Length: 513
Image (cartoon, rainbow, N blue to C red):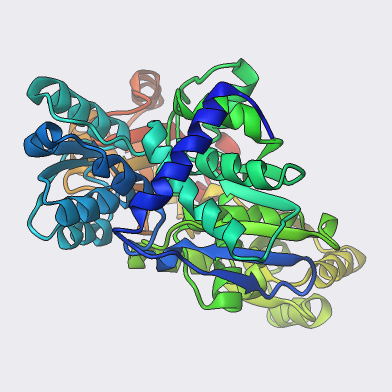
């Protein structure tokens, strides 16, 4: 048990929080996950009043407002889950709340905030990111002298989140050998790790971050909180640019390790959670299980704890999650295979090499009289996939694994090159709000190039992704455009040309830049 003063102080606050939070909601169950290997238990925070653990910290903090503070009301910033916790507390305590939310917040979360607030909550929708909402909320808090309820960087909020760990200890299912704790700003991980370490000193506590969100891992390396230049938003519930100043020293003291998980691993864990528990977490809610499943070969004989920390998933995102994974959480792989452009060659390929493999996607367009390059999206057990690639080599097929390539992610097939003069392809990540793409095209493209290609699919994320093909009347005009192209613009989070090899594969023309 650590004697670090901030950890010791947080432990005392968790003790006090136990008396407060259950005025607002009930404890959540601990459920065995049917893993077939190691023993994994899932803390079902998706069954809490707001479908995530966030009510605990918000209610604990707001229960301690003085009468004068409660009279003034509170402000908060949130991309969804924390806002619902504030709304729940505001309705129960009779306190007015103004909650700032970015325009990219899924509608399901915006609607839930108003429902839980029961007339006590006003939402202020503006900005393209959580950081925009945070700055607006802090500015109002200073100007109006109203208390700001932080989503994670407040010891009282952290203490409220720690009550879920108290329920784990009291469940009688422990002690656990390993716990995987997802990290955004660090409020839940700080509270839970403090409590678990206090009761089970030998437990191994592993923080889990998304590969494009690893602000705590960066802080550990730097010795202090540092902001990330860019934050991936697939796991929107943990999409934080910088770990909290209060949470950082506690995490540094209590965690044994920090690991990162890919979006594909998270999607696979969501599928596994559905298969095993008939629960559908939001991406951030499945991060702990994603890391646990990846490490399961090292867990034999161990008792493993993960937290399903939220299930406020935008329904529109289900399509993308289904695309990213398949049965038993296996990832989708894409292979590009050369075959002769003649009758029967496709069937011959399937007969020779595809035993035990499921085809989930197929892309093909005839653009050569002698050769074809069909693209297959495949799902299989590791052994079957290995055997298939061995058979491809034995049969002298020319093939390549292009899993993750941008042309595959956008389901792109070759264009007719004789229709283009001096083309280029851009990757755009734009904020999912009305007018965002129009603002960028108007400011950057209008009058400079013709739109020759556009490929986009809505996935339910706060950032939309598109491939944009532009055609120019001369190589000089194309070069001038690319040299002046901004990395971002009005409504657009990032903009960059595709690498020449990928663009060449899509456009099938020697004039690509």
